[in-house]
Length: 383
Ligand code: LLP
Image 1 (tube, rainbow, N blue to C red):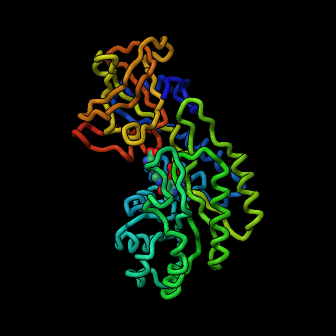
Image 2 (image 1 turned 120 degrees about the horizontal axis):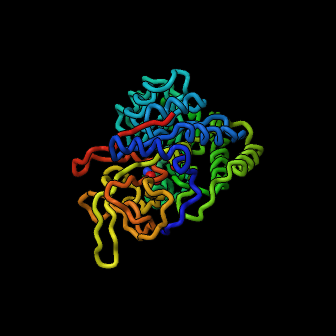
Image 3 (image 1 turned 90 degrees about the horizontal axis):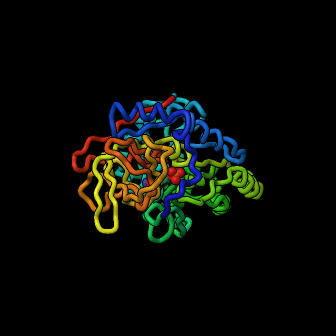
């Protein structure tokens, strides 16, 4: 925790500031997405020469303009529900590849996905044990649990014994027997260990482990090493080294060159591209604290309450004023956890100042709720 600005890209600090103030003057709360930043992040990832295909994990942000921009950049799309599949199919050209990687989904979700062009992933024995006819003679992806998870918070780690994701490797032989019995071909192997990872060596290890399993299976032609690419959020964190990641992946591909390498990043593409704009409401001094209220809270952005996530907060109206106050920035929701930022050094606020919550492009709007029946933040796109 701290009040130092992280190294996050801040397109909003410069030429777009006035535009954001104008957008906030019409209504708050509002999410604003900056498409040039999405494209810039996409182009960073396209420098990964070792990667044969990139799918955008659409759960991070399903805005059609973002889906369209990433389709233009040549991305495929990773979806986890029929709703996400429908949103993508409506927003992108038919040539964009789709991946369906649900978890504990009902039978009818797979039945729907199999009517689309999506490549379908399974991560349990159950679908082949009980719904084998659905998958007869299909090519599928198998998601395995490599026995460990990683990520910025325990709630976003998706591997290891405490996690519900992936087929444990010790059930691989049972899975292959069931697949064989139904003529199902395991064409892809997949693992995703978690979200918000800033250590580039991790994906090389995942590729190596999956490739050695693929050698046992025989029918595999692509290996999906998941998403999870982090962006620095806490003060002092360093950005992922994309050139370093490429070196790691190229090295490990030399050992196992027969497989296509796929990745499915979400956050990396959209986090810095989005901000949440709100207006200050009331202030209150209470005990040792000064509370600064804004007109939206955990109903619009639940990440601080759910993961103790740190989002930079600035007073956009008084961007360059001296930060002489120490505030707890809170929303209007009836929960003690409705705190967007603790101990933030900010200018003395006036009622109605526009506050900007940064890095809100990923897992912001998509995780918002109608709680307390407060109006949902509208979304605005800057081309
Ligand atoms: N692939 C799979 C199978 C996933 O489950 C996820 C994210 C991704 C890819 C994309 O991960 P990313 O590149 O965005 O880290 N709500 C949390 C993050 C949950 C991520 C869930 N799965 C947050 O706000 O930090």
